[in-house]
Structure formats: C-alpha cells, structure tokens
Length: 186
Image 1 (cartoon, rainbow, N blue to C red):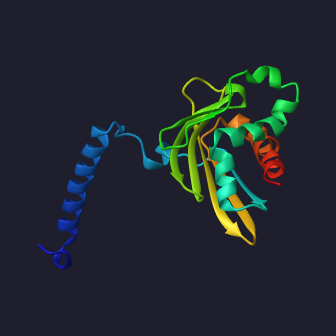
Image 2: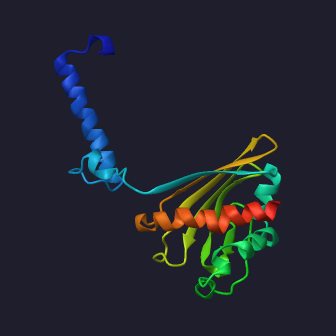
C-alpha cells in the first residue's frame, strides 16, 4: 500500500494504529491518556520583556553583568541597596562565576541562580530566583546584547516567575539593574 493508494478503510486503520503508538508513547512518558493537549498547555503565565539602550559597547555591558567586581558596583547603586530594603537583603558579598553552570549571588544573597548559557558580548541566560520565592522555584532571565548606533540595545526577557510577582519584578529590573547599570557605564 502506498500513500497514493490509501482507501478510507486503510486510512482509518493507519490512523488507529498511529493513535495507539502515540498514545503508548505519551503514556510511557507520564502523560495521562484522558488529557487532551489543550489541557496540558497553558498560555497564561506572566512574562516580562524590556528593551534598554546603553551608550556603551556590548563588551562593557556584558562584563558589567558577568564580572563580580563590576556588578557589585551596580548593586551599590541600586534602589534596593539604597532603601529600607537593604536590611532584608542580607550581607553576603556579590559573587559571579561566569561560566555555564556557574553560580551567582547578588544583592546580599537575595538574588541567586546559575548561568545556563553565556555567549560573550551577545547573550546571557540565567536560572534566576529571588529569596522570597518557594524553595527550588527558578525563573529564566535572558539578556540579548545588540549593537545599536554607538552603544548597545539590551533585549531582556524574564519568564517562569510567580505571576503575582510580575509588577514588582518589572519595576525592579529598572530600578535595581538598568538605572544603576546606566550610571555605572557613564
């Protein structure tokens, strides 16, 4: 039987066989046969996308985000470290191990995570978490650096965080990352 010679009965039999095979595969990986695909996929999670321009090269921006001594200066310029929130953040030093799998601890240990991907002067991907989140809960923060004019456009995306934290995080990226980073790069 070739695809061009399929009758309705042959097609129905083939479809039934394929459904059985895919159903078995789905069950083998833990899917419940009763669930429809629409019940397994959600499109309702909050996400943040921000674009910020810096009048510095991609190399300078990349280094500021990945070198301990440089990022510590950004932390010191942040709203969090210059407000009453400083008492909540802790006293751990800034540490950044900028290699895939390397850990980071920022803002007195309140922000922690690991680097998932580093493409020098181009992209940083982190498993990122705030200290107030449930243990083991991580989000994904992606920084893409693009040359623009004489500076750098940073395209930032943050996904997988608790939905109720969206507004706080969106503001926090500006007042604790982008604004102090702009000051640092001048």
